[in-house]
Length: 344
Ligand code: MEV
Image 1: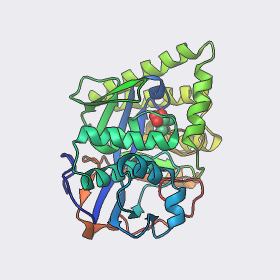
Image 2: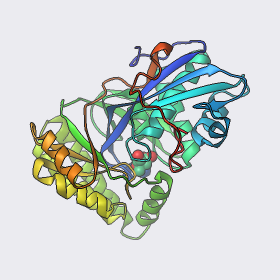
Image 3: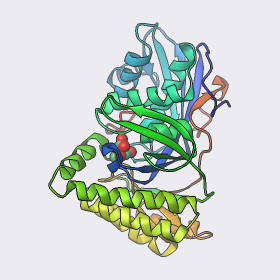
């Protein structure tokens, strides 16, 4: 495993894997230049690439043609080179706000970057964002930066080491390292798939109303305080700020009764929580009381969520030996979910 370093030149067949992500503070506001804290989590997407007579995704040429991320990756990073077949395995639930598309984009950017001469980690972050943004049409580089960097990263905030800056031509996001407090988090999927681009547009409309700038300022204040509290390892304060951030997300219209029910169920065993990712479905994240993670999981499961205790993935996207392809979970992706285009 050579994650964490630059991606060396290689030749097909190649395999890469990338962690998923969980946004702790600042989703949506980050699209408008606000601060964000994102952590890479130990649920992985693994992608194998080999030369083939025609492009395919998990054995299907139709899936390859219909998958916007694969198409964007080929268009931007592969050009007119000979066709490739991709095989994807994943433990990141799809359309769940936990980074399945960012991880897929980071893994294919690592594969295609390696097969075209290698690239630095900062370039990998840039290219993974280019592919995800090209496919989604909107969004920030928060998700792809976390899946490329591993660990905790802050956008537009923090005093940690500078990792890279990513620009979309109009806006530039500065990405910095945030030290890992070593905590366990509980994330839980509501079972309701969501569409990132749609929710980003909903929130953008809401923020363009007269009270939008004030709302954005409140997002900024909460995220900055949250990033500081994580740095000082103050769990209670982080929990309070998670709940405060959730209030704002509710106010901009991206919560959902199912998410609220899961947060309420987890509350007795946690310091606080919020939706994570685009919202309007997707997942929640809660900070459990140490030693009560299983209780939080039980409570959420009883309320109908699909909980995971997650650890931080210290290393970001990178190449792995092709022989281990498929080893992330043993679960392959049949591409049966029409709402998730990342892994079909
Ligand atoms: C989606 O995971 C996070 C959003 O802030 C969009 C983005 O930053 O690209 C909603």
